[in-house]
Length: 125
Image (cartoon, rainbow, N blue to C red; front, top):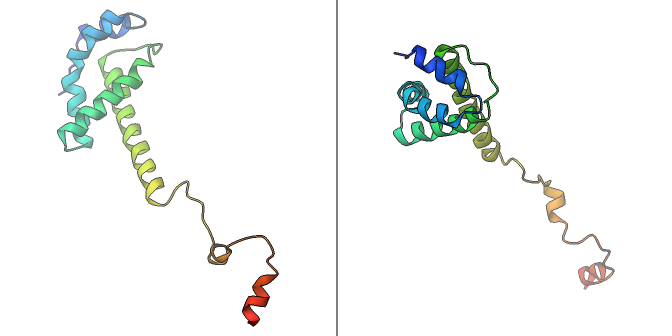
């Protein structure tokens, strides 16, 4: 069950540039963020990694005008979902040979682009 206390709302509003407010906010929102992360994942280590990545992205969002705890948790849930989607896309990109140069069969047989007049002579011999 999400915690939408006035204390969380006050800390969110104070957070804009106030590291102490953020440090006070983290332990209050940690349980709900963990619950949200577990809805996406089943492994504890992955849950912690997901929450940590969300924190890193939330730190960059200091200029957001937080309305209340529900607004914060909604943004945090969207961030976690985006993190997972980005990771899945990267995994599929690598799985499908992303970034590798595709070479046709004929192109793979070419040993050298230079003309070698001795090739025909060797073939005739």
